[in-house]
Length: 131
Length: 131
DNA sequence: CAGCATCCCTTGGGATACTG
DNA sequence: CAGTATCCCAAGGGATGCTG
Image (cartoon, rainbow over the protein chains, first blue to last red):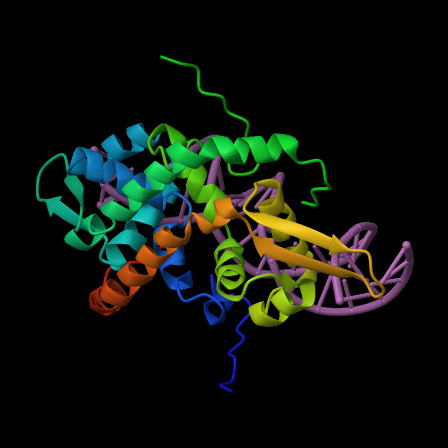
């Protein structure tokens, strides 16, 4: 049995990966705000920082920056900077990012077909709900 | 233009849903620990509380309880209680939960085929990483 | 066994203000 | 425009102890 490394404190290093092989992808793709960002870039093509900001409505520049950096680092988004005045920067979904499209589409289908059931279940549920 | 409801404080009510139709499903299925739990139940059939706890290794009973309640409420997991001494409770993935299996499988495939690229991108990345 | 109750603490993120 | 820099807070979780 291999030794389990426990580094409490570092982000997203809970070890579910032990029990669940897709945990890394989940962390990668389904972190807060990453899905909306990828989706928006996928639908609209290259967008500038402000354009993204506007479409995501409630996101703050700080968080948008942070998520974009992360997505860029992970190769899901490409950042292109133009030497202009005023400065222009465009973000575009990468080929790698695009390869997630079918999965997003499937999630969309699943949603259409099953979210109603989830709503049902929620209404029917009477038990306790801690936290 | 429809009025955007803003209730800061309530969980997962950031509005990315505006820009991203699959946000609700993402919140439902890819919250912390839910994937490992569903995956484990899917692989192993009905499991008792302790069995789940053991397989998930680092999860605490508090969190496990909380996630299970949530999954039960949303109809993704079924809880069966047996009137025995000592008490026995079994958790099983529901039909609705099972319907997610293909998507999980696709995520697994994507992972196998592309996580290496992500690693590459991370190593190649030199820019700043706020947060 | 299968939790529930408490306490506590890290941290993701929101709000706001400011620069190159 | 495209971010940075600070301040700040709620909340998700971890640890521990107790109960039906």
